Image (cartoon, rainbow, N blue to C red):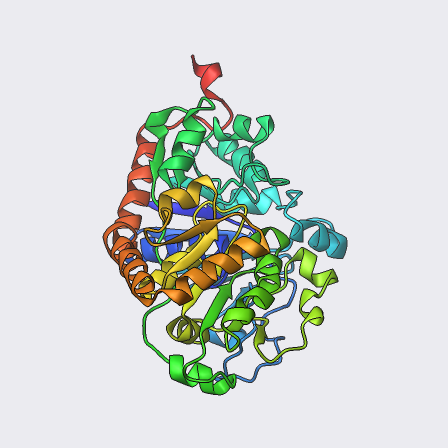
Length: 414
């Protein structure tokens, strides 16, 4: 099948960015003809300041220039990565347009270029609602069905739960969701159940070890508990509340290290909550390679990401792959994925509740082991990538066999 993915950020790292990357590259590995149209990152290729052959721990939405044979034009460039043709397009509006486009609140995709790279495709698959309006417009003009992975965060600003969002969802030939709860959420709001496929996602890391080396590198004693957070430092993800839980945990387990790995989000760009803690037991790593994340997961005792808004939560899967228990926020998708005291503990996003959950797990090694094993079994049985991509292919088949034209919603066809 000839597939076009549309996404603002497309990258092996990140949340929705890496989800699109995994979908695209794994479908290409199965023999599909896959192309991605995404934004041209603000930092041009080759300007990272990292010499060829060396790695960097900073996450980036770009690609290392020396890895690819790039064909560049004034307003876009093209290269191939793992069998996927990647088309990076400069948004409309020059430098101001690039700044506005980065907020994801506006769609500044160049429609003429998108149409050029969509005209030979069997379907367009949009991930995360970025460039969704331009994708629907081009699909309508070309008569191509649209598959949508909305990744909605109900209740969050620009979270995908407005009436205008559902008007867009109804124009898609198929939707994919991360959980049964998310699927039911769409059905309760009038989306046809025959067009919704629960795919889930798989982990990005591999269990290769390195925990001892990670401890040595960051001066963490071999017997000190580690509470690990991996995620973008956005306020809604709860990293501040986890940081503020440290004092309570230290009263009982004074050697505990709190390790935070992730790039800055919008909030943390302006407010540095780590400045309140000048303590060697707080380890803040702005970004990390997959190898460093894997080593941190191998080293940690507990993984905690108490986010108020998640469609799935990649970090929990990666912690489980390493056999570690998790702490998440008590929200509907995580009740389904984690389960209260099944593969982890769910709590309100408050420092006192987070501290209690951490202490409960540090107090009970047997419970930690049981929850970690349960989580690992879930990853291997439900969310291995081959099964996930089987379900993505099923959604694509639904879209091409019973496509709703992108310019019409179900009510218009009734």
